[in-house]
Length: 122
Image: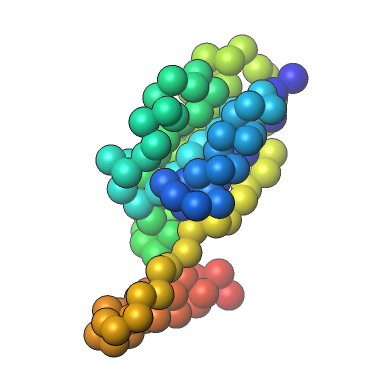
């Protein structure tokens, strides 16, 4: 039976790599990212990958996802793949904020967002 994993930060880096890895192992993957236009185009060719928008700094968006939007989307993936398993077995949080040299104001904005993310998880 297929299991389902939710991966945050799936547009680049570890999140992107893990999306491919879990999909190759037969998992249903909810690949989340802030901007779905930045998703790897190869995700579209994978029947067991659902690309969806989720910004981990948006508390209201997270609540909407948990209360239904994302859960319904993951259930749709399960329907397509023919599994009766629960909608989520594993969550992998790889979303992060990039720190770039020489842009102090932008770094401070990103730090403020990071504080918001960590405060939301306390």
